[in-house]
Amino acid sequence: MIRYFHRLGEATLSLLESIGSFTIFTVQTIRWIFARPFDVRALLYQLQEVGVKSIPVGTISSFFIGMVMALQLGVSMEKIIQGVSSFMGGGIALALTRELAPVLTAVLLAGRVGSSMAAEVGTMKVTEQIDALSTLATNPVHYLSVPRFLAAVISLPLITVMAIVLGIIGGSIISYVRLDIPFNQYFETARSFLKPEDLISGVTKTFFFGAEIALISCFTGFRAQGGAEGVGQATIQAVVYSFMMIIISDYFITYIYQLFGF
Amino acid sequence: MSEVAVSIRGLKKSFGTRTILDGIDLDIYRGEIMYIIGKSGSGKSVTLKHITALLRPDEGEVRIHGKNIFEMDDKELIEVRKKMGVLFQMAALFDSLTVFENVAFLLRRFTKDDEDTITKKVRERLRLVGLSHVEHLKPADLSGGMQKRVGLARAIALNPEIVLYDEPTTGVDPILAAAVDDLILKLNHELGVTSIVISHDMESVFRVADRVAMLYDGQFRLIGTPDDFRNSQDPVIRQFVEGSAKGPIPIL
Ligand SMILES: Nc1ncnc2c1ncn2[C@@H]1O[C@H](COP(=O)(O)OP(=O)(O)OP(=O)(O)O)[C@@H](O)[C@H]1O
Ligand SMILES: [Mg+2]
Image 1 (cartoon, protein in one colour):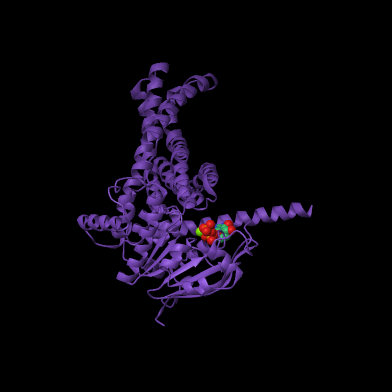
Image 2 (tube, chains in turn cyan, blue):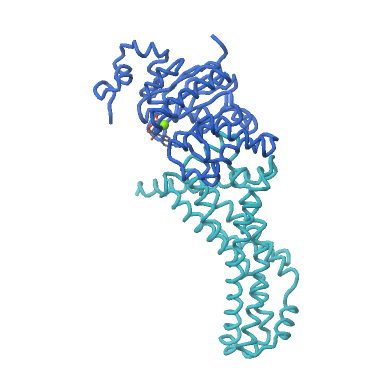
Protein backbone atom coordinates (compact mmCIF):
# COMPACT_ATOMS: atom_id res chain seq x y z
CA MET A 1 0.00 0.00 0.00
CA ILE A 2 2.73 2.42 0.98
CA ARG A 3 4.69 1.26 -2.04
CA TYR A 4 1.71 2.09 -4.20
CA PHE A 5 1.48 5.65 -2.84
CA HIS A 6 5.21 5.99 -3.21
CA ARG A 7 4.97 5.08 -6.87
CA LEU A 8 2.00 7.36 -7.39
CA GLY A 9 3.97 10.18 -5.79
CA GLU A 10 6.95 9.55 -8.01
CA ALA A 11 4.82 9.43 -11.14
CA THR A 12 3.12 12.69 -10.19
CA LEU A 13 6.45 14.37 -9.53
CA SER A 14 7.89 13.21 -12.82
CA LEU A 15 4.78 14.41 -14.67
CA LEU A 16 5.02 17.81 -12.98
CA GLU A 17 8.72 17.94 -13.76
CA SER A 18 8.03 17.22 -17.44
CA ILE A 19 5.32 19.86 -17.64
CA GLY A 20 7.65 22.35 -15.99
CA SER A 21 10.52 21.58 -18.35
CA PHE A 22 8.20 21.71 -21.34
CA THR A 23 6.95 25.14 -20.30
CA ILE A 24 10.51 26.39 -19.93
CA PHE A 25 11.38 24.89 -23.30
CA THR A 26 8.41 26.65 -24.92
CA VAL A 27 9.39 30.00 -23.44
CA GLN A 28 13.00 29.51 -24.53
CA THR A 29 12.01 28.64 -28.08
CA ILE A 30 9.82 31.73 -28.37
CA ARG A 31 12.51 33.93 -26.83
CA TRP A 32 15.21 32.62 -29.18
CA ILE A 33 13.09 33.41 -32.26
CA PHE A 34 14.15 37.03 -31.87
CA ALA A 35 17.85 36.35 -31.25
CA ARG A 36 20.58 36.96 -33.79
CA PRO A 37 21.80 35.59 -36.08
CA PHE A 38 18.49 34.68 -37.67
CA ASP A 39 19.14 31.58 -39.76
CA VAL A 40 17.14 32.14 -42.95
CA ARG A 41 18.66 29.13 -44.67
CA ALA A 42 17.60 26.78 -41.91
CA LEU A 43 14.08 28.20 -41.96
CA LEU A 44 13.78 27.78 -45.73
CA TYR A 45 15.05 24.22 -45.44
CA GLN A 46 12.51 23.40 -42.75
CA LEU A 47 9.70 25.07 -44.70
CA GLN A 48 10.58 22.72 -47.51
CA GLU A 49 10.74 19.64 -45.26
CA VAL A 50 7.78 20.45 -43.02
CA GLY A 51 5.59 22.39 -45.41
CA VAL A 52 6.11 21.70 -49.08
CA LYS A 53 6.68 17.98 -48.66
CA SER A 54 3.53 17.63 -46.56
CA ILE A 55 1.26 19.14 -49.20
CA PRO A 56 0.56 15.86 -51.07
CA VAL A 57 -0.36 13.92 -47.90
CA GLY A 58 -2.53 16.72 -46.58
CA THR A 59 -4.42 17.53 -49.75
CA ILE A 60 -4.95 13.99 -51.04
CA SER A 61 -6.29 12.83 -47.66
CA SER A 62 -8.63 15.78 -47.47
CA PHE A 63 -9.83 15.20 -51.03
CA PHE A 64 -10.92 11.71 -50.00
CA ILE A 65 -12.48 12.94 -46.77
CA GLY A 66 -14.60 15.28 -48.88
CA MET A 67 -15.64 12.33 -51.06
CA VAL A 68 -16.50 10.13 -48.09
CA MET A 69 -18.56 12.89 -46.54
CA ALA A 70 -20.53 13.23 -49.75
CA LEU A 71 -21.34 9.53 -49.60
CA GLN A 72 -22.26 9.63 -45.93
CA LEU A 73 -24.44 12.71 -46.17
CA GLY A 74 -25.92 11.83 -49.51
CA VAL A 75 -26.63 8.14 -48.99
CA SER A 76 -26.62 7.24 -45.27
CA MET A 77 -28.03 10.47 -43.87
CA GLU A 78 -30.50 10.88 -46.70
CA LYS A 79 -32.19 7.65 -45.56
CA ILE A 80 -32.88 9.20 -42.14
CA ILE A 81 -33.40 12.85 -42.98
CA GLN A 82 -34.93 13.27 -46.39
CA GLY A 83 -33.67 16.20 -48.39
CA VAL A 84 -30.47 16.65 -46.41
CA SER A 85 -28.42 16.03 -49.53
CA SER A 86 -29.64 19.27 -51.07
CA PHE A 87 -27.50 21.06 -48.49
CA MET A 88 -24.57 18.87 -49.35
CA GLY A 89 -22.09 21.58 -50.36
CA GLY A 90 -22.77 23.62 -47.23
CA GLY A 91 -22.51 20.66 -44.89
CA ILE A 92 -19.24 19.46 -46.32
CA ALA A 93 -17.72 22.94 -46.50
CA LEU A 94 -18.69 23.75 -42.94
CA ALA A 95 -17.47 20.48 -41.44
CA LEU A 96 -14.22 20.57 -43.38
CA THR A 97 -13.44 24.19 -42.63
CA ARG A 98 -14.28 24.24 -38.96
CA GLU A 99 -13.07 20.84 -37.90
CA LEU A 100 -12.07 18.09 -40.28
CA ALA A 101 -9.39 19.73 -42.40
CA PRO A 102 -7.59 21.46 -39.49
CA VAL A 103 -7.51 18.38 -37.27
CA LEU A 104 -6.82 15.92 -40.06
CA THR A 105 -3.96 18.00 -41.44
CA ALA A 106 -2.52 18.50 -37.96
CA VAL A 107 -2.66 14.79 -37.18
CA LEU A 108 -1.06 13.90 -40.50
CA LEU A 109 1.69 16.43 -39.91
CA ALA A 110 2.25 15.15 -36.39
CA GLY A 111 2.82 11.71 -37.84
CA ARG A 112 4.97 12.77 -40.74
CA VAL A 113 6.90 15.72 -39.37
CA GLY A 114 6.73 15.23 -35.60
CA SER A 115 8.26 11.79 -35.81
CA SER A 116 11.09 12.95 -38.02
CA MET A 117 11.82 15.99 -35.83
CA ALA A 118 11.96 13.85 -32.70
CA ALA A 119 14.14 11.22 -34.38
CA GLU A 120 16.52 13.79 -35.83
CA VAL A 121 16.90 15.87 -32.68
CA GLY A 122 17.00 12.71 -30.54
CA THR A 123 19.79 11.21 -32.62
CA MET A 124 21.74 14.44 -32.31
CA LYS A 125 21.23 14.29 -28.56
CA VAL A 126 22.44 10.73 -28.02
CA THR A 127 25.44 11.16 -30.34
CA GLU A 128 26.53 14.32 -28.49
CA GLN A 129 25.91 16.53 -31.52
CA ILE A 130 23.79 18.78 -29.32
CA ASP A 131 26.68 19.10 -26.86
CA ALA A 132 28.90 19.88 -29.83
CA LEU A 133 26.50 22.63 -30.92
CA SER A 134 26.73 24.21 -27.48
CA THR A 135 30.50 24.18 -27.50
CA LEU A 136 30.40 25.75 -30.94
CA ALA A 137 28.83 28.77 -29.24
CA THR A 138 25.41 27.93 -30.64
CA ASN A 139 22.32 27.53 -28.52
CA PRO A 140 20.67 24.24 -29.52
CA VAL A 141 17.18 25.65 -28.99
CA HIS A 142 18.05 28.57 -31.25
CA TYR A 143 19.60 26.39 -33.92
CA LEU A 144 17.26 23.38 -33.92
CA SER A 145 13.99 24.30 -32.30
CA VAL A 146 13.35 27.79 -33.70
CA PRO A 147 13.39 26.97 -37.44
CA ARG A 148 11.26 23.85 -36.88
CA PHE A 149 8.79 25.78 -34.76
CA LEU A 150 8.46 28.60 -37.28
CA ALA A 151 8.17 26.20 -40.21
CA ALA A 152 5.38 24.25 -38.52
CA VAL A 153 3.50 27.38 -37.46
CA ILE A 154 3.70 28.83 -40.98
CA SER A 155 3.07 25.62 -42.92
CA LEU A 156 0.16 24.07 -41.11
CA PRO A 157 -2.36 26.90 -41.70
CA LEU A 158 -1.40 27.09 -45.37
CA ILE A 159 -1.73 23.35 -45.92
CA THR A 160 -5.04 23.44 -44.05
CA VAL A 161 -6.40 26.02 -46.49
CA MET A 162 -5.35 23.79 -49.38
CA ALA A 163 -6.94 20.81 -47.64
CA ILE A 164 -10.23 22.67 -47.23
CA VAL A 165 -10.32 23.58 -50.92
CA LEU A 166 -9.42 20.08 -52.08
CA GLY A 167 -11.92 18.50 -49.68
CA ILE A 168 -14.76 20.66 -50.95
CA ILE A 169 -13.82 19.82 -54.54
CA GLY A 170 -13.68 16.10 -53.68
CA GLY A 171 -17.17 16.34 -52.20
CA SER A 172 -18.52 18.16 -55.23
CA ILE A 173 -17.30 15.49 -57.62
CA ILE A 174 -18.94 12.62 -55.72
CA SER A 175 -22.11 14.67 -55.24
CA TYR A 176 -22.32 15.13 -58.96
CA VAL A 177 -21.26 11.68 -60.09
CA ARG A 178 -23.08 9.55 -57.52
CA LEU A 179 -25.95 11.74 -56.39
CA ASP A 180 -26.68 13.95 -59.40
CA ILE A 181 -26.31 17.17 -57.43
CA PRO A 182 -25.33 19.88 -59.91
CA PHE A 183 -22.09 21.71 -59.25
CA ASN A 184 -23.71 25.14 -59.06
CA GLN A 185 -26.19 23.99 -56.38
CA TYR A 186 -23.35 22.40 -54.40
CA PHE A 187 -21.15 25.48 -54.47
CA GLU A 188 -24.12 27.81 -53.93
CA THR A 189 -25.00 26.13 -50.60
CA ALA A 190 -21.31 25.98 -49.69
CA ARG A 191 -21.04 29.72 -50.29
CA SER A 192 -24.18 30.58 -48.33
CA PHE A 193 -23.34 28.32 -45.34
CA LEU A 194 -19.74 29.32 -44.96
CA LYS A 195 -19.05 32.52 -42.97
CA PRO A 196 -15.67 34.24 -42.71
CA GLU A 197 -15.55 33.39 -39.01
CA ASP A 198 -15.69 29.68 -39.87
CA LEU A 199 -12.54 30.06 -41.92
CA ILE A 200 -10.87 32.17 -39.24
CA SER A 201 -11.77 29.68 -36.54
CA GLY A 202 -10.66 26.64 -38.52
CA VAL A 203 -7.43 28.04 -39.90
CA THR A 204 -6.16 29.99 -36.90
CA LYS A 205 -6.39 27.02 -34.60
CA THR A 206 -3.94 25.12 -36.78
CA PHE A 207 -1.43 27.77 -35.80
CA PHE A 208 -1.59 26.34 -32.28
CA PHE A 209 -1.54 22.75 -33.55
CA GLY A 210 1.63 23.50 -35.53
CA ALA A 211 3.27 25.01 -32.46
CA GLU A 212 2.30 21.99 -30.37
CA ILE A 213 3.70 19.50 -32.89
CA ALA A 214 7.06 21.25 -33.26
CA LEU A 215 7.51 21.97 -29.56
CA ILE A 216 6.52 18.51 -28.37
CA SER A 217 8.64 16.78 -31.00
CA CYS A 218 11.75 18.86 -30.42
CA PHE A 219 11.27 18.57 -26.67
CA THR A 220 11.08 14.78 -26.66
CA GLY A 221 14.09 14.73 -28.98
CA PHE A 222 16.11 16.90 -26.62
CA ARG A 223 15.26 14.58 -23.74
CA ALA A 224 16.20 11.39 -25.59
CA GLN A 225 18.68 9.25 -23.73
CA GLY A 226 20.57 6.04 -24.26
CA GLY A 227 21.18 5.29 -27.90
CA ALA A 228 18.87 4.00 -30.61
CA GLU A 229 16.28 2.77 -28.14
CA GLY A 230 16.02 6.21 -26.58
CA VAL A 231 15.52 7.78 -29.99
CA GLY A 232 12.74 5.28 -30.70
CA GLN A 233 11.05 6.14 -27.41
CA ALA A 234 11.32 9.86 -28.13
CA THR A 235 9.74 9.37 -31.54
CA ILE A 236 6.81 7.40 -30.14
CA GLN A 237 6.26 9.99 -27.42
CA ALA A 238 6.40 12.83 -29.94
CA VAL A 239 3.65 11.32 -32.08
CA VAL A 240 1.41 10.14 -29.25
CA TYR A 241 1.64 13.35 -27.23
CA SER A 242 1.17 15.47 -30.35
CA PHE A 243 -2.01 13.54 -31.27
CA MET A 244 -3.37 13.90 -27.78
CA MET A 245 -2.51 17.57 -27.50
CA ILE A 246 -4.07 18.35 -30.87
CA ILE A 247 -7.37 16.70 -29.95
CA ILE A 248 -7.48 18.05 -26.41
CA SER A 249 -6.48 21.59 -27.33
CA ASP A 250 -8.93 21.50 -30.25
CA TYR A 251 -11.76 21.23 -27.75
CA PHE A 252 -10.54 24.09 -25.60
CA ILE A 253 -9.65 26.38 -28.48
CA THR A 254 -13.06 25.79 -30.07
CA TYR A 255 -14.76 26.40 -26.74
CA ILE A 256 -12.92 29.69 -26.24
CA TYR A 257 -13.56 30.79 -29.84
CA GLN A 258 -17.27 30.16 -29.38
CA LEU A 259 -17.29 32.40 -26.32
CA PHE A 260 -16.13 35.15 -28.66
CA GLY A 261 -18.71 34.28 -31.28
CA PHE A 262 -16.51 32.34 -33.72
CA MET B 1 54.15 31.01 -12.85
CA SER B 2 52.07 32.62 -15.57
CA GLU B 3 48.39 33.42 -15.59
CA VAL B 4 45.74 30.78 -14.87
CA ALA B 5 43.52 30.01 -17.86
CA VAL B 6 41.26 27.40 -16.32
CA SER B 7 40.74 26.95 -12.62
CA ILE B 8 38.71 24.10 -11.14
CA ARG B 9 37.74 24.33 -7.49
CA GLY B 10 35.96 21.77 -5.32
CA LEU B 11 34.09 20.24 -8.23
CA LYS B 12 31.64 17.53 -7.18
CA LYS B 13 29.34 15.53 -9.39
CA SER B 14 27.21 12.47 -8.74
CA PHE B 15 24.86 10.64 -11.07
CA GLY B 16 22.18 9.17 -8.86
CA THR B 17 24.03 7.56 -5.99
CA ARG B 18 27.29 7.18 -7.93
CA THR B 19 29.81 9.86 -7.12
CA ILE B 20 32.03 10.47 -10.14
CA LEU B 21 33.88 13.62 -9.10
CA ASP B 22 34.41 14.04 -5.38
CA GLY B 23 35.78 17.55 -5.06
CA ILE B 24 38.57 18.05 -7.60
CA ASP B 25 40.91 21.06 -7.81
CA LEU B 26 43.14 21.91 -10.74
CA ASP B 27 44.76 25.03 -12.22
CA ILE B 28 45.72 25.06 -15.87
CA TYR B 29 48.02 27.88 -16.93
CA ARG B 30 47.84 29.89 -20.10
CA GLY B 31 49.80 28.20 -22.89
CA GLU B 32 50.19 24.96 -20.99
CA ILE B 33 49.53 21.45 -22.26
CA MET B 34 47.73 19.64 -19.46
CA TYR B 35 46.95 15.95 -19.78
CA ILE B 36 44.21 14.31 -17.77
CA ILE B 37 44.60 10.58 -17.47
CA GLY B 38 42.74 7.88 -15.61
CA LYS B 39 41.13 4.56 -16.25
CA SER B 40 38.00 4.12 -18.31
CA GLY B 41 34.97 5.42 -16.45
CA SER B 42 36.99 7.45 -13.96
CA GLY B 43 35.25 10.67 -15.01
CA LYS B 44 37.62 12.27 -17.49
CA SER B 45 34.93 13.10 -20.01
CA VAL B 46 32.67 14.26 -17.20
CA THR B 47 35.41 16.65 -16.08
CA LEU B 48 35.73 17.98 -19.60
CA LYS B 49 31.97 18.49 -19.83
CA HIS B 50 32.14 20.64 -16.71
CA ILE B 51 34.96 22.76 -18.12
CA THR B 52 32.73 23.46 -21.13
CA ALA B 53 29.62 24.00 -18.96
CA LEU B 54 27.78 21.15 -20.68
CA LEU B 55 27.20 19.64 -17.26
CA ARG B 56 26.44 21.52 -14.07
CA PRO B 57 28.24 20.42 -10.93
CA ASP B 58 26.58 19.53 -7.64
CA GLU B 59 29.16 21.77 -5.98
CA GLY B 60 32.23 23.76 -6.91
CA GLU B 61 33.23 26.07 -9.72
CA VAL B 62 35.17 26.32 -12.95
CA ARG B 63 36.74 29.65 -13.78
CA ILE B 64 37.84 30.47 -17.31
CA HIS B 65 40.11 33.49 -17.38
CA GLY B 66 38.84 34.30 -13.90
CA LYS B 67 35.07 34.06 -14.45
CA ASN B 68 32.92 31.28 -13.05
CA ILE B 69 31.21 29.70 -16.06
CA PHE B 70 28.33 28.36 -14.01
CA GLU B 71 27.26 31.90 -13.12
CA MET B 72 27.30 33.19 -16.69
CA ASP B 73 24.20 34.03 -18.69
CA ASP B 74 23.64 32.70 -22.22
CA LYS B 75 25.44 35.62 -23.86
CA GLU B 76 28.57 35.45 -21.73
CA LEU B 77 28.74 31.71 -22.17
CA ILE B 78 28.56 32.06 -25.95
CA GLU B 79 31.45 34.53 -25.87
CA VAL B 80 33.56 32.18 -23.73
CA ARG B 81 32.75 29.21 -25.94
CA LYS B 82 33.86 31.06 -29.05
CA LYS B 83 37.32 31.08 -27.49
CA MET B 84 37.23 27.36 -26.72
CA GLY B 85 37.54 24.46 -29.13
CA VAL B 86 36.31 21.04 -28.11
CA LEU B 87 37.09 17.71 -29.72
CA PHE B 88 34.59 15.10 -28.56
CA GLN B 89 35.50 11.54 -27.79
CA MET B 90 33.16 10.31 -30.57
CA ALA B 91 33.84 13.37 -32.77
CA ALA B 92 30.13 14.36 -32.64
CA LEU B 93 30.15 15.68 -36.21
CA PHE B 94 26.84 17.01 -37.52
CA ASP B 95 25.76 14.09 -39.65
CA SER B 96 23.32 16.09 -41.76
CA LEU B 97 26.13 18.39 -42.89
CA THR B 98 29.09 17.64 -45.12
CA VAL B 99 32.66 17.66 -43.84
CA PHE B 100 33.09 21.10 -45.39
CA GLU B 101 30.00 22.49 -43.68
CA ASN B 102 31.05 20.99 -40.36
CA VAL B 103 34.41 22.72 -40.48
CA ALA B 104 32.88 25.93 -41.83
CA PHE B 105 30.23 25.98 -39.10
CA LEU B 106 31.83 28.59 -36.85
CA LEU B 107 33.17 30.65 -39.75
CA ARG B 108 29.70 30.89 -41.28
CA ARG B 109 28.08 31.82 -38.00
CA PHE B 110 30.54 34.18 -36.46
CA THR B 111 32.65 35.76 -39.19
CA LYS B 112 31.82 37.98 -42.13
CA ASP B 113 34.16 35.99 -44.37
CA ASP B 114 33.05 35.57 -47.96
CA GLU B 115 32.67 32.13 -49.52
CA ASP B 116 36.19 32.13 -51.05
CA THR B 117 37.85 32.96 -47.74
CA ILE B 118 35.80 30.30 -45.97
CA THR B 119 36.75 27.70 -48.57
CA LYS B 120 40.40 28.62 -48.20
CA LYS B 121 40.26 28.46 -44.42
CA VAL B 122 38.39 25.15 -44.36
CA ARG B 123 40.89 23.56 -46.77
CA GLU B 124 43.78 24.85 -44.68
CA ARG B 125 42.29 23.47 -41.44
CA LEU B 126 41.67 20.12 -43.07
CA ARG B 127 45.22 20.00 -44.40
CA LEU B 128 46.45 20.77 -40.91
CA VAL B 129 44.81 17.57 -39.66
CA GLY B 130 46.03 15.61 -42.69
CA LEU B 131 42.85 15.44 -44.72
CA SER B 132 42.11 16.43 -48.29
CA HIS B 133 39.46 15.63 -50.89
CA VAL B 134 36.89 14.73 -48.26
CA GLU B 135 35.06 18.08 -48.13
CA HIS B 136 31.97 16.84 -49.90
CA LEU B 137 31.56 13.60 -47.96
CA LYS B 138 29.11 13.14 -45.12
CA PRO B 139 30.56 12.12 -41.74
CA ALA B 140 28.99 8.66 -42.05
CA ASP B 141 31.27 7.98 -45.04
CA LEU B 142 34.45 8.54 -43.03
CA SER B 143 36.41 6.17 -40.82
CA GLY B 144 36.48 6.79 -37.07
CA GLY B 145 39.97 8.28 -37.20
CA MET B 146 39.03 10.58 -40.06
CA GLN B 147 35.90 11.74 -38.20
CA LYS B 148 38.05 12.61 -35.24
CA ARG B 149 40.37 14.70 -37.34
CA VAL B 150 37.43 16.52 -38.93
CA GLY B 151 36.17 17.13 -35.40
CA LEU B 152 39.53 18.64 -34.57
CA ALA B 153 39.50 20.82 -37.69
CA ARG B 154 36.01 22.03 -36.72
CA ALA B 155 37.11 22.77 -33.16
CA ILE B 156 40.05 24.96 -34.19
CA ALA B 157 38.30 26.81 -37.01
CA LEU B 158 38.05 30.10 -35.10
CA ASN B 159 41.59 29.92 -33.62
CA PRO B 160 40.45 29.24 -30.05
CA GLU B 161 42.58 30.17 -27.06
CA ILE B 162 41.78 26.97 -25.20
CA VAL B 163 41.42 23.59 -26.89
CA LEU B 164 40.03 20.54 -25.12
CA TYR B 165 40.75 17.15 -26.66
CA ASP B 166 38.88 14.07 -25.51
CA GLU B 167 41.12 11.15 -26.46
CA PRO B 168 42.44 12.61 -29.72
CA THR B 169 44.59 9.58 -30.52
CA THR B 170 42.20 6.77 -29.61
CA GLY B 171 41.09 4.91 -32.74
CA VAL B 172 43.80 6.53 -34.84
CA ASP B 173 46.75 4.53 -36.22
CA PRO B 174 50.19 5.05 -34.59
CA ILE B 175 51.55 7.25 -37.39
CA LEU B 176 48.50 9.50 -37.32
CA ALA B 177 48.58 9.48 -33.53
CA ALA B 178 52.09 10.91 -33.69
CA ALA B 179 50.85 13.47 -36.22
CA VAL B 180 48.01 14.47 -33.87
CA ASP B 181 50.55 14.84 -31.04
CA ASP B 182 52.64 17.06 -33.29
CA LEU B 183 49.56 19.09 -34.09
CA ILE B 184 48.81 19.65 -30.41
CA LEU B 185 52.41 20.80 -29.92
CA LYS B 186 52.28 22.99 -33.00
CA LEU B 187 49.07 24.75 -32.00
CA ASN B 188 50.56 25.22 -28.60
CA HIS B 189 53.91 26.63 -29.76
CA GLU B 190 52.76 28.68 -32.71
CA LEU B 191 49.48 30.05 -31.43
CA GLY B 192 50.01 29.80 -27.69
CA VAL B 193 46.91 27.66 -27.30
CA THR B 194 46.14 26.32 -23.85
CA SER B 195 45.53 22.61 -24.27
CA ILE B 196 43.67 20.16 -22.09
CA VAL B 197 44.07 16.65 -23.36
CA ILE B 198 42.32 13.54 -22.11
CA SER B 199 44.24 10.43 -22.98
CA HIS B 200 45.06 6.83 -22.12
CA ASP B 201 48.02 6.92 -24.40
CA MET B 202 51.07 7.11 -22.09
CA GLU B 203 53.42 7.51 -25.03
CA SER B 204 51.65 10.73 -26.01
CA VAL B 205 51.61 11.84 -22.42
CA PHE B 206 55.37 11.55 -22.10
CA ARG B 207 55.99 13.09 -25.50
CA VAL B 208 53.63 16.07 -25.32
CA ALA B 209 52.48 16.91 -21.81
CA ASP B 210 53.78 19.85 -19.77
CA ARG B 211 51.90 18.52 -16.77
CA VAL B 212 49.67 15.56 -16.06
CA ALA B 213 46.78 15.01 -13.67
CA MET B 214 45.54 11.54 -12.87
CA LEU B 215 41.93 10.97 -11.87
CA TYR B 216 41.37 8.11 -9.48
CA ASP B 217 38.37 7.46 -7.26
CA GLY B 218 36.84 10.87 -7.89
CA GLN B 219 40.01 12.76 -6.96
CA PHE B 220 43.25 13.79 -8.59
CA ARG B 221 45.70 11.23 -7.31
CA LEU B 222 48.70 13.15 -8.59
CA ILE B 223 49.19 16.41 -10.47
CA GLY B 224 52.73 16.83 -11.75
CA THR B 225 55.18 16.77 -14.61
CA PRO B 226 55.67 13.64 -16.73
CA ASP B 227 58.87 13.06 -14.75
CA ASP B 228 56.93 13.14 -11.48
CA PHE B 229 54.81 10.34 -12.94
CA ARG B 230 57.80 8.36 -14.15
CA ASN B 231 59.44 8.55 -10.74
CA SER B 232 56.34 8.10 -8.60
CA GLN B 233 56.43 5.30 -6.05
CA ASP B 234 52.64 5.31 -5.65
CA PRO B 235 51.53 1.82 -6.73
CA VAL B 236 48.37 3.22 -8.36
CA ILE B 237 50.42 5.57 -10.51
CA ARG B 238 53.04 2.90 -11.24
CA GLN B 239 50.40 0.46 -12.41
CA PHE B 240 48.80 3.01 -14.75
CA VAL B 241 52.09 4.26 -16.18
CA GLU B 242 53.35 0.74 -16.76
CA GLY B 243 50.00 -0.43 -18.10
CA SER B 244 49.91 -3.54 -15.94
CA ALA B 245 46.82 -5.58 -15.13
CA LYS B 246 48.24 -6.42 -11.72
CA GLY B 247 48.13 -3.83 -8.96
CA PRO B 248 45.82 -1.84 -6.73
CA ILE B 249 43.56 -0.53 -9.55
CA PRO B 250 40.57 -2.85 -9.80
CA ILE B 251 39.86 -3.75 -13.41
CA LEU B 252 36.15 -4.35 -12.99
N1 LIG C 1 24.99 11.83 -18.27
C1 LIG C 1 25.34 10.81 -17.46
N2 LIG C 1 24.40 10.19 -16.71
C2 LIG C 1 24.74 9.18 -15.88
N3 LIG C 1 25.98 8.70 -15.75
C3 LIG C 1 26.96 9.27 -16.46
C4 LIG C 1 26.69 10.35 -17.37
N4 LIG C 1 27.85 10.72 -17.95
C5 LIG C 1 28.80 9.90 -17.44
N5 LIG C 1 28.27 9.04 -16.55
C6 LIG C 1 29.01 8.04 -15.77
O1 LIG C 1 30.14 8.66 -15.20
C7 LIG C 1 31.26 7.79 -15.24
C8 LIG C 1 32.43 8.51 -15.85
O2 LIG C 1 32.18 8.71 -17.23
P1 LIG C 1 33.24 9.37 -18.20
O3 LIG C 1 32.60 9.39 -19.53
O4 LIG C 1 33.71 10.64 -17.63
O5 LIG C 1 34.43 8.33 -18.19
P2 LIG C 1 35.85 8.50 -18.86
O6 LIG C 1 36.84 8.65 -17.80
O7 LIG C 1 35.79 9.53 -19.90
O8 LIG C 1 36.03 7.03 -19.51
P3 LIG C 1 36.58 6.64 -20.97
O9 LIG C 1 38.05 6.64 -20.87
O10 LIG C 1 36.06 5.26 -21.16
O11 LIG C 1 36.05 7.61 -21.92
C9 LIG C 1 30.83 6.57 -16.02
O12 LIG C 1 30.64 5.53 -15.10
C10 LIG C 1 29.54 6.94 -16.67
O13 LIG C 1 28.67 5.85 -16.66
MG1 LIG D 1 35.63 9.56 -21.90
